[in-house]
Image (tube, rainbow, N blue to C red; front, side):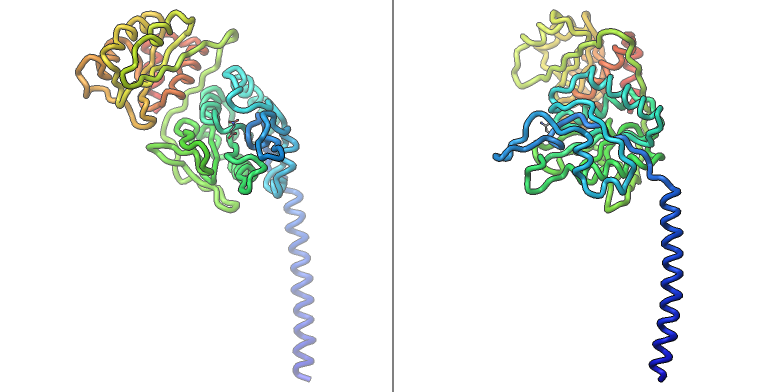
Length: 364
Ligand code: ASP
């Protein structure tokens, strides 16, 4: 009997519990229905992340469109209300500076039309440059996150879907908008200003030498414990043709033939990647002085991390000598990013050497 009573009391309380949990899950569902998911625009540019693969495992140059890419990622629709689109379908080596200027305009439109965040998917080869140039051009109040994939969809381990989900989760966090453009790869969140592709093929190919990532995504949690202290620079290109800036890397014992030619090739600016903390061979000095007479010349380090010296080397070809000759220090920007900052400054009509120097300084 007791067991019978117990069982009937038990089933009554179970029924009660069930009724309560049905009521509360209905409440939860209503709450879910009434709280819409953030609207995240996913803009596809192409790259390995969405490239169709043939029977041999090679991916083609053309990528699938943004809608198909998004539809192929299970669970993404539960993270955000995704609005996919296709901006370009190219490998990232075929993205031009003008494309990035147009992309910045597209992102601004998406923000103006109510997107809560934007995720760009693209090839990883030029991802750090696209992200940084967007960072220089954009003035939007929503998070903008760039991602890609190191493995094409035909490989046994594929990173694209996880990277897109992590990027979308990151883009749903409005408080990250003020950090500038972010790059999310392999579970890490990087500032566009510091991130670099450091490996040809590793899944974790991206890093921020010297500073590290500012955060990470684990499971469904986006963590950003570090925030860049730098001041952002925003530059709007004036209408008309974009400037052309050459990038030249110095190497052991090189002659100066290419350097000598650059001023005659119609470039608007030049970035040289110097040895170490800002040094060139004395044989390059005359060519550099001639280049400075023709255009702004910025010097960065070919080492890929660290800040240039300012007052250590006192010999011909040292960082002090270069500054005295009118070259502008890239401070801690590498050659790729220094080229984009110089280009964006020129595009915005900044031609004064002191203003350029100040921009490179202020940007740290
Ligand atoms: N070649 C590809 C690209 O950058 C590589 C990649 O997507 O990872 O477009």
